Image (cartoon, rainbow, N blue to C red; front, top):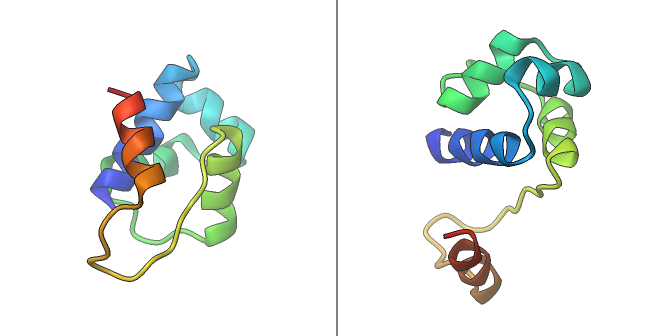
Length: 81
């Protein structure tokens, strides 16, 4: 969760949004968004996560644990550095 939260925080800041603004747009509390970003959210529904990701133009990818990153993922990671 910490890596996921970090990516959410980075994307939010890149778009010039505060936690309060993104939380309002997403229909979640600022406290919950803060917990997502810090990786300490106790429980959250996938629809809420999907809404945050949609607003930030991000997508969630599911793959087997331990699988190496795809070429596309490596290219995206290098493009953001």
